[in-house]
Length: 477
Image 1: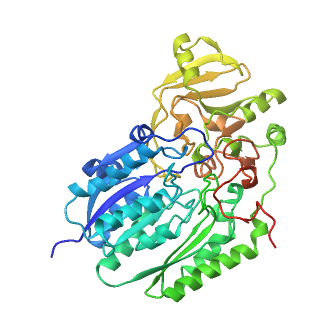
Image 2: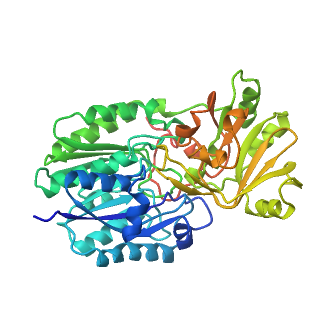
Image 3: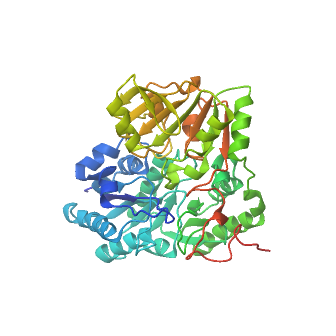
């Protein structure tokens, strides 16, 4: 008997709709876009859900058929013509994949198009229109998905990450493949339920090891008859109708059980919602405390310039606060293509005035590096573009890149000759995700309430499409 043939597809983007610049086809093509066997070669060994698809298919005796996958660094909503081009490439890949018995699809869940604001649901709608309702489609989502009813209605089962930093991506991909194997053998009949209380969880409290929501989730996963369950914390930098925290359960042929599970999770979250608020230090307070901290380095997480949430990676708020207070030996990584060009022009060893500080060009690099450890995002081969390192008389290190790079790997700075353990202050443009890497070197990690397009407080954004009222933006009894 031939193995069931399972198509592998992926389309992942976290879309910050408060950014004025749309995301284009080129942003995906220049970051990661693979088809056919190139997809297998790129992802099979990665600590990513697509790598988990391949692993799980092999374990389940399924033939994995790679189709199309693409990813872009979090940024603005996807321009309409480019969304259509990507969607057509993804759907069109089915033509070259031969007969399929099922699909495994890696989506993000917070992808937004200029017209199709529930872009993930739209992709699933188009897949169903092409393949029909009977073909099993199991989907993985990021923990930060804004889950719509359309996604639930179009999928056979949905599995979301359960850790932030996202260290379980490969495991969730393998879990999705196991579920699919059970469906194809006729051993299980997944049914899903979704609960969406009016709740937004600020990003500063989204470290899952500290969050009671995920302890509740572990309880539900032990219930007899529950095949899978997920807590999706949402992405409140996307102004869409579905924005907010959601709870998913997949039960075996038991809709009532799935509904009981999500109602249990949602009610417990709502009862303890006041615990989901954090008091954070200002930039001035954080830098002052870091300067006198007895152990170094102190990592200052620049929440408002969180690259993983779509920010530009160019905020100087924390670095200029270090300069103002006379701190020494800090490090910051900035997206600054024009400044890199100037460094190239003056050359290694020569002085340069960057405007906000002055120093000498210590090193120029192609910006390529490899991360082999399990890290948030699951990426192995990374490219931050042509990179310059500038050292100042105060022992500050300024790393300037020509590609935006989320700070998920210490190799980002080690690859350009910087030893993070030797710095007193590390300014990191993220929140929870980079902690998987930086906790290895940090004496202390401090989340800082900085301004910007990824600020911590959901109430600081002006929404047009989200549901109202919603905690904590509106007072609710």
